[in-house]
Image (cartoon, rainbow, N blue to C red; front, side, top):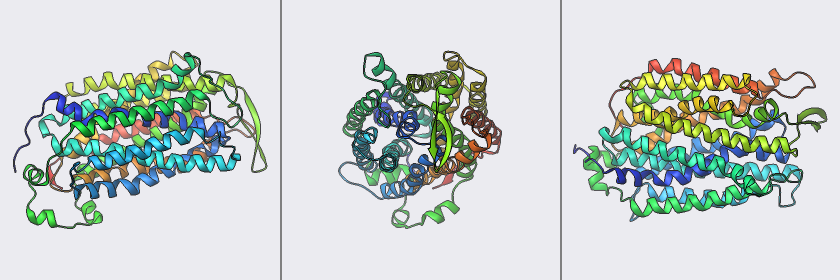
Length: 455
């Protein structure tokens, strides 16, 4: 098997540059979806359920995209066609989703529209995101993979920073940050429009600049024989043959992504109630009176914008910590340390009532995010070789989707356990639980097995 040559910094940069635009879209989704559905009228106990369909779609689509791209070759490449199609769908949905409350639909119809729009947005973003990880596995040698995934992590966090800050910045320049009941504010709508434009421009750049290996060259660098190229192996069989790193890293991933699903779902309500003192109102849900935050209030919408700022601080913390990660000789030590710091950050939000002190909490959370973006894929791709790289990375997406599905399914019931009768649901407790999950994940890092295995 031939050894892949070293690539220049700018070639590594070009492979991942489109990730900047994709991550802007992902940041807008993760920071604003709970805000959008709460504005449309969703009860806090139901918020997590709106997040079930996206990872459910992802767990079905990603392995299929990975397997299909392993067998694809056309004039545009192996992975890039899927990257481009996913991005185009994401752009279309980003222009529709924030208008769910502006089409004159009833509340229930607007929520159903928003739910399916969210499903397509999350699926298309993931379809666009996965090829970047696959291209690093395809084109970069083991010596440079750490640098390649660090570049990807930097671009990811830079994109997150931009996406998270958009609503806050648009409010600062004068766009309207409040709207009628059930209507999404202009600051959010225009954030999605601008994010969609940047996404497609970044993806076009990568599509033009990156030339993937043709099939013969790919086979030489990955040690694939003609027999293996023709071999048809089911995904179930590949799972059975998966290296131990796949399963042991997957266990850690479960606790990590469970935690971050709670963050995306409950941070808006937590900050609005715990820091900004948003007023409450009574609403009827299935004939039962419920106390909820008043989403039309200035305090709630200012808190929602501030959540974007906090997520941006998390992205900055992630960038800074990503620089430190390569300085550790032992990947497992820095992985466990990063998750533990993130866990402390989540738990600390319970005790902080000052919007600026929360910066410390979210910098610590950023340490966990940096490790989650880079280390699992470095460990996994270094344990694989052969012709099923894309399929395995698609299957590995299940370790991201399954915990999100579980967290979304259980979120409402867990929040109900904390909610006093006739009282406001204490969403801040869910962030504390997220911190506990990250610390459990840190404890599980010790069982990870790093060993090369045929893919």
